Length: 330
Image 1 (tube, rainbow, N blue to C red):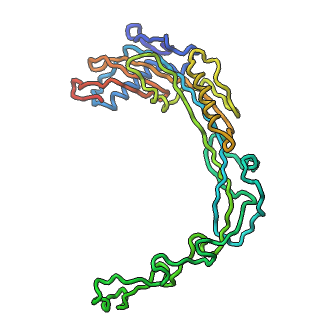
Image 2: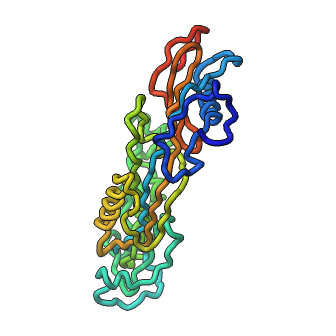
């Protein structure tokens, strides 16, 4: 048991230290006081127990686990074709061969802070070309789709006898089109009335962080703790490697699955990249997550749960049956 726990020999529950981390990190050991407080909060949140009753910690087994994470910050560039109304703005003269991947990476782009995702788009120099709008054939206006270009449409009067009394068409049987204000034509939505379009290529830059992580397998204890729960808690960082590219882990012979996962993740992230995607930065970390199997007595029953993470969260696989004072714990 960690130093600082003031319990007499008859009150102190046995603590199994065989599964402690050999490096002796203090923050990965869950004390009896911390485990008792976590269990009390757990019980108070799921049952209406008497306040005078407290859980009694009978045994505390430490089993801290390793978590390995790899973050790869990447930048991808692609060329997209687009157009916009030409309003007389100046354009660069066309240049040949600007679409190759090699020349695409020669363009200077301000990179955001590492591992901060985002996107940016800007015109590719020398790719502009002016063309007549194909939708309105350069007129700037298109035939109204509602009235077919006539500026009017047939009034939906209840019957032919009531046309003369209809206030909507004043008896004429036809109404002015409100969509084009009776003109029969509307401003072209493509060129916005300009009649010409500026076709160009734009560079689409995307910064993305590839993430992968794995948690070492715990000892075979019952009840087992789902490893997916450990992805949402924090632990004590014992290793951090931040560089342009990182090498697979070494020096973790006691946890071989971490070294294997590190090598596999690094290779997978390299395979994702290619001519249109580059690796800017990599970061790998190893954390020790505090986990303890707590066996305690409560309301005359012998129960168990896991306390895990620096947040001291509680997971109980076993469902507690109805207690004597009429409160069921789920």
